[in-house]
Image (cartoon, rainbow, N blue to C red; front, side):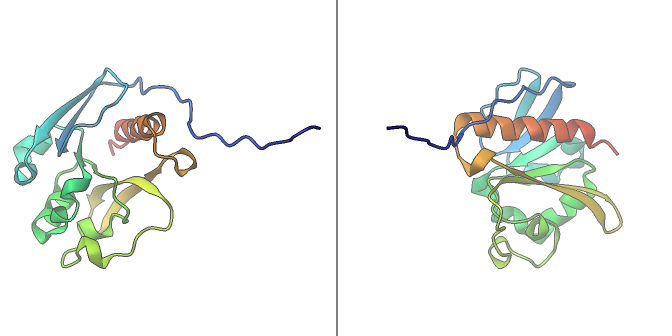
Length: 161
């Protein structure tokens, strides 16, 4: 008797980010990543409103615990004026609740694709770039999360417009 089974992979094998060193501000706990050329600096949420802080960073990560709070109108201005990308880690929403004033996180529908992170970089006027990062086969595990961060780092490196 021969059994044929399909092979369902639950982890991706990807290369580490090997670009220029990055300095990333984090509101919440710093992620556990495999790269050695990434420096994380932890900040309180209110500190990201300080232009002098964001001028010295390549990006800011905002973790799941702070997503609801970061949709306040005062932060929408920060995302639009900082000149660096912001990544909303474990957000199940698009970038919209973060950049649109008078829109709360709970008001925006959940994205149908299983995103792990959403990124946004404001460029000028009403223009900006946004990114979504999912996990391989939508499986939450260490390798897939590390891969998502690697893709985020590559995006940060290439997002100097």
